[in-house]
Structure formats: structure tokens, C-alpha cells
Image 1 (cartoon, protein in one colour):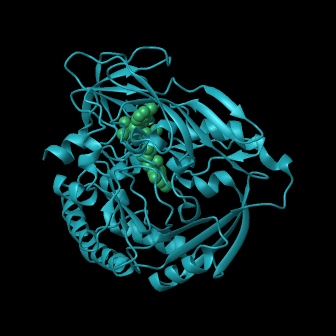
Image 2 (spheres, protein in one colour):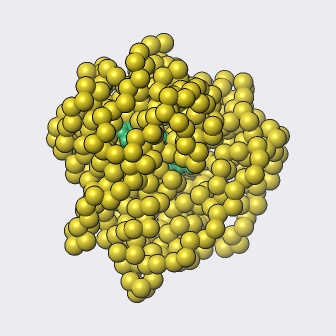
Length: 443
Ligand SMILES: Cc1cc2nc3c(=O)[nH]c(=O)nc-3n(C[C@H](O)[C@H](O)[C@H](O)COP(=O)(O)OP(=O)(O)OC[C@H]3O[C@@H](n4cnc5c(N)ncnc54)[C@H](O)[C@@H]3O)c2cc1C
């Protein structure tokens, strides 16, 4: 079964569930949770794990040999305050569904990742960040309350400031199952974004543009070439438009295309990615281009191609996303790009962004002050060797990797990157586990 989002599993039947990276391949029982007042179904002798849209790349949403509880039927709005923009909804509701509800009403998610096909439970459990991290922080910073169902049947309404709240935000689904989340939305005038795209020749320009843009631009991100000329790229900055009328909040959804089959492994080779990078970099003739665009292509360019992960072939893809602190960070980013280029491995989508200093709400939150770099590769033996070398570069400067994107970091690396994992263990629900957690804490 490819993901749980589109095809539902039957309770008690072992099926192969894939995460977005399609690696590792695991088999687990799938239990669908339909109502919040249902008791938690825990098969005898097995551990369980909540599973949203499976948009994590690696094994943090998988529970090999055990069971996952799909939350996708828990998708009801429970309360909405249209004056204050506070929404309480079930944890299986996706950002896509929330956007359909709140944009016409003049509200927007306070933080959104690069895909709208994630559940609110998944956004809380990974404490996701977006293009506005430098001003807003992470999703968990906007959660006002959530209800957690523990394996022993107890229910806990959690608020910021409580230890179990801190453990559950970015808690990788291991403190129990979140049934609902209440969070603060952000007011918007309409659905449009004013965007500037600037061609940048290298990392120095990236850092200068980031410094210049941070005070006045809400959304910042850069696409970076790693194949032809490492470090050059496009710097993209955006703000919610304030000029148009609120009536411009609704729009017909554009139909998305779907990748119909697994591409052969050579399709995303160094040559084709290099050619794509060249075209992408040069598609804009002027150094700066200004446009006002709908929020969908601005925030979610990849969502217009459904199942784009099949472009990477059957072997799947490996995402590698790090955070490096400011001290030594710029040099580390340069070394990471150099090492990737030298290896001959091609990263199709390379994203670079500075992050802000708002303290994260979770004990194991990934985001923090510094620079984040995300690379993605077709999975293969040489790639794994390269990623081990990249791990060493970030370890030297006190960086860390994002568990939501990971399928291969060593247990030793995880424990070094997240020294609070032992404190976290105290809050973990003994009935819950994941393939990721066993991999990084037992090895
Ligand atoms: C194209 C793409 C772009 C992305 N861009 C970003 C980005 O910009 N920033 C970012 O931070 N991330 C990004 N991600 C990662 C994604 O946002 C996270 O992995 C997110 O958590 C996925 O949500 P999900 O509903 O698919 O959760 P799943 O992947 O199904 O699960 C993720 C984790 O949440 C837990 N969980 C899910 N629901 C519950 C619940 N109800 N109760 C308790 N635990 C629960 C699971 O146990 C698991 O540990 C991106 C992913 C993709 C595919």
C-alpha cells in the first residue's frame, strides 16, 4: 500500500505502508480511528503509532511489525472563533482542508510546511516550520491546547507551559495520540502573495539577501544549485498582499497532475538535474522579478504534481535536512555544498533558509536559530556514504538533522543531536513506539 492517505487499510490486516521517501519498506497493522470517544485500539503484544498523511520522508511515521493508527477520519472542525481566528479541529484534518475553510474567511495557517497535505496532528508532532520561521517560529508556537489520549486510556488536555505539552510538540507521536488541536490562525486580506525572485550568484549573496529581507519580508526561502555551480540560485521573498479586495479570497482549485508510474532510476541523474538547474536558474531573464501570485503555487509548488516522489523510482528518495547554528554555520553550509558537488551525487531540490531565534515549544523540536539546508537524493549506496560525510560536517559545528526527513542517521548521531532525548523518554507512552525511535535509541 502506497501511503495511507489515499487507500485505507483494514483494521488488523498487515499492509506495507510507505512514508513519502518510500524507504524503508515496512509492514504493520493499520487501524482506522473514526471517533474521538472510541477507546484506543492497541493489538495485544504490539505497540502503536499515530499516522497522519505519511508526509514524513523516513521512518518516523512507521511502526514495522507493530501497528499504526490512521487519523485521517478524524477531520472535523470542533470550534471556530471568526473574530479571533482560533480554530479547534480534530487532529486528522489536513492543512489543505483547513485552507479551504479559513482562507475565504480571512484567516491563514500561522506556519505551513512546503506541502498542504499534512495533518494538524503531524504538524504538531513534528513541530513543523515554514518560510516564515525567522519571524514566526514553528507550528507549536501557535498551539493553545490539545487533547492527548494515552495508552492507559487516560485523556489529558495540554496547554503551553506543561511538561507533557513540551514533550508532545515535536514528540514524534510517542507521547500518545493527539485527538484534537486548538491553534491561532493569522489574519489575511486576500489569497494573494506579493513575490520577488532574485537571482543570486553564491552563498555570500544568499546571506546578504537574507539579512536585508528578514525585517520586512514574512516569507523567505532560496533554491540552490548543487550540480552546475554550487551556491548560485534563486532567492524568493514574499508578503501577503494588502492591495486587493477581500473578495479575492476565493478561487477555483486547479486540477493537479499525477505521476502515473515509477520513473526509471536514470531519469533523475546528474546530467538531467544539471540541465534542469541551468534552465531553472536562467528562466528569469532579469536579476529581480516581481509578481503577485496565488498562495497555492507560492507555498506549495510541489503539490501540483501528485505523487511526485515516484519520479525517484522504486528505490525511493532520501531527504537530508540539517540545521547549523550561526557560529560556524555559513562555513559549514559552504562545506556541505562543496562535498555534495565533489561526490558527483545530484540533489534535485536543494533548499536553503535562515531560521529565527523564537524558542521552539517542543523538547525535541528541530528548528532553532541558524541556517537550514535540505537536499534530496535518489536512494543508493553512494548517497548513503555521502550523507554520512555530511553528518560529520554538521556534527563539528553543533548542528542537527530533522527526524521528519530522516531514514538513516545513526543512533549515536541522533543522541548527540538531541541530548534531551533521555528526558523525553520519561514522557513517552510505553504503548507507543516507531521504527525511527527503535532505530535511533536502541542501536
Ligand atoms: C513536499 C514536502 C514538503 C515538506 N516541507 C516541510 C517544511 O517546509 N517544513 C517542515 O517542518 N516539514 C516539511 N515536510 C515534512 C512534513 O511537514 C512533516 O513530516 C509532517 O509532520 C507530516 O505530517 P503528516 O500528517 O503526513 O504526518 P505523518 O508523516 O503521518 O506523521 C508524522 C509524525 O506525526 C505523528 N502524528 C501524526 N498524527 C498524530 C496524532 N494525531 N497524534 C500524535 N502524533 C501524530 C506520527 O506518529 C509521526 O511521528 C515536508 C514534507 C513534504 C512531503
